[in-house]
Amino acid sequence: MIIKKFQANTETEAIMLAKEEMGKDAIVMNIKTIAPKGIYKLFRKPSVEITAAVDDAVSYKNDKPKEELLRKPRMNFNPDIIYEDRVKPAGLSGKETSGEPSAIEQKLNNLQNLLEKQLNTKETEEREEPKAAAEANKNLACVQLVYNQLVSNEVDEIYANQIISEIDGTFRSDASIDKILASIYQKLVLKLGQPKTIELGEKGPKFVFFIGPTGVGKTTTIAKIASKYKMEQNAKIVFLTADTYRIAAVEQLRTYANILGIPIEVIYTEEDLEQAEEKYADYDIVFVDTAGRSHRNKEQRDDIERLLNIIPEEKKEIYLVLSATTKYRDLIKMTEVYSDITSYNLIFTKLDETGSVGNLLNIRMLTNAPLSYVTFGQNVPDDISKIDAQSIAKKLLRGQ
Image: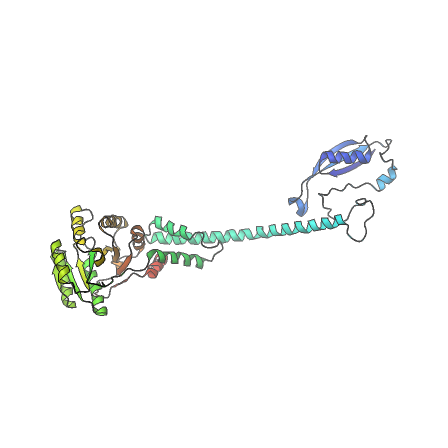
């Protein structure tokens, strides 16, 4: 009995090879699938190997002597198989191979080079993938730390998430931590905005109203700002106070007026304000101190609104004075009430009495009202400055 093995892409092709080589009487004894090995397994399909047998007494189809067939068996070339030893089997082209590679050998070599290149690229990507993933995880951890820092500084989670989401996608996954921090810092500075300060009127006086709840330091803030304009620009200034509910408030402002050498008047009605507009028509700035009103009291809110409406829009500026120490939920209610009355700029007082400045950003983003001044003590006129967005952003990021 003669036994031989044949390989092909499919079982049918392998059987046909066996029948062609061994004759129609060949019997298939075994069939198995040959999985590709080595580096080519990613790119090649499995082949089929069959074991065929024929009785000695049965002649081969081509009638070749048995000895010759055993000595020089036919090798069936499968174009999908790349031979490991790179040697071309005898009989591929009907003649023995020469020293020069045949066209088929050249194609095989070219294919192998291509596959090796693809595999090397894949292996390089696989090696780099953990590095890229590590960079992404590092960046994510950095962003999470910044988020936590903002929230610990009492920035509302809504606004912290908004800021983080706005910078997401603006830098590569392998961006340095410094670049991430710089992006967030720049975003904070933009959100805080440029300070809106008092501008002198081109024609006639500028009426500057200070509104806000009781106890936030409106009167002291007026004195600080007025002192700056008096000393630095020699502006012609007058004080008006509508805070007739507190005698101490009137006396406090009168004291500052005497020190600065500027006039002061008490306003009891809307008509008094109209008369003051005519009386001080040649002044630069008219500072108007209003009574501290409860945001819960509608009647008091209406009094403020009527007073503000006396002066034309182009001749007035309105500043809502809030304390940085006030709870955020209370600040929300206050700003909502005053937003129903008028548009305004924001002044925050008592910055020296709190360790966090998150509410400045919160209220700025909630109301979209410009930030203007901050105060940080009782000293007149020193403890006040224009809002410094860069300084506030740094405090938000480092917590001091």
